[in-house]
Amino acid sequence: MPRRARDHQPARPTWRCGTCGIAWPCSPAKLRLLASYRLDRQALLAYLAELQAEAAAHLTALNPDTPPLPATLTDRFTAWASPR
Image (tube, rainbow, N blue to C red; front, side, top):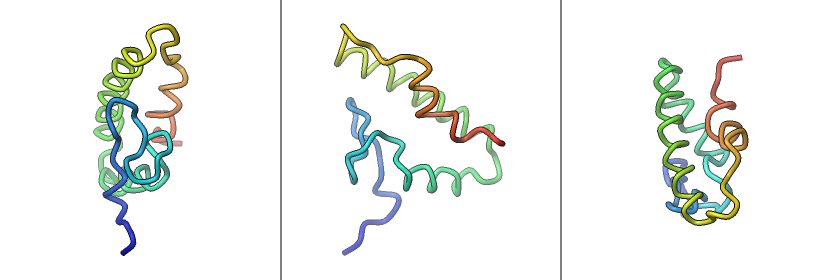
């Protein structure tokens, strides 16, 4: 049975997609989020910023010697969702 887009959820604390295993948000998750928030991009960006902060804390706890760079997390979590 094929997986549905909503199955592409983050696996905490690694922040990899629980379905496809790549860094979350993966492409199917991005498409689902864009569709869900199509009428309110600002709400999407606020939600993604909250998740980015949570991911930063988790990823730093997992790798305290090499925490993720803020710019890298911004690219990963919010830059793609900003209106062009």
